[in-house]
Length: 221
Image (cartoon, rainbow, N blue to C red; front, top):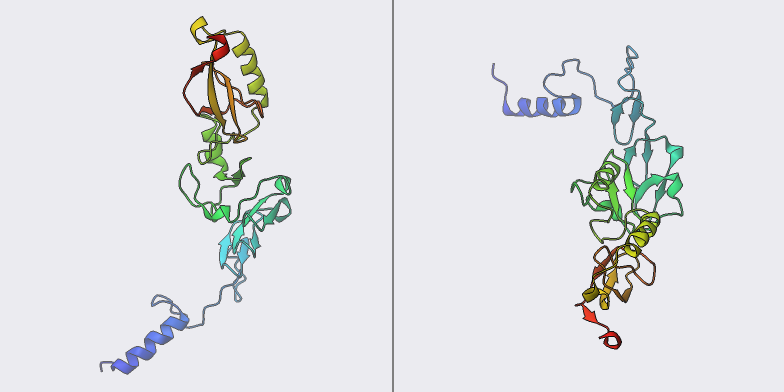
């Protein structure tokens, strides 16, 4: 005899409580790390909040992040302003930007907050995936968002000092000055034009951009 619509509805609700149509054991489903009957281990790690089963990777659940992260937990702290778990060596030593973890990585455009790849904090406070940061350094040294130097360039700037000193400009350019904007300190200064780079008078960085036209000093025309 064909089942009535009411009977079909009851069976559908029962299946909803007890599992899909392929689940024939007829017991209620409950997420847990081991089977109550045979003690089979479903996952070396289990989170009863995220209901995540996984191999043991020293995971831990971060209440503030709202997700499980790869640990060990003692190696990380949660920055409330950045809203992300960061390595302990960055505690008190990084520039915070509120909710910066909710932005996508500017290199790959993928999510940072839920990524399994460790986030790298640039000196400017912006975040990149660690793998994206390492790839970026093969092509350049500046943050793709604000152009601030992505690492300590002091040693390279001093090498550039020597190269500039050993490379005099042609006579027609020796008295030419330009206005520059520094990407590292945001300061403006007027310096002598040089093809190899123009050094900020404030922080001595060569991470600068020309902010005006060239001009010849009047007292040396």
